Image (cartoon, rainbow, N blue to C red; front, side):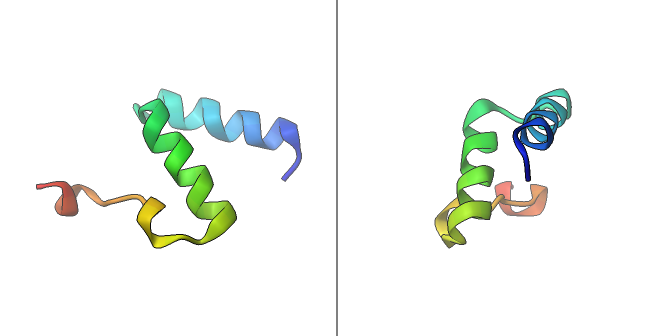
Amino acid sequence: MNMQEVSRLILGLRSAGWSEKEINDFILFIESGDEQYRPKGKEEDD
């Protein structure tokens, strides 16, 4: 991804209601594959 695509991704996640921590963790998961940063589904949050 280039920087323009990354910024659009971040802006899209913000507009979808994601917090900054959720966005940062998601980007860390994409880059590292570390399961501790994997996004949790709504079912997992309950």
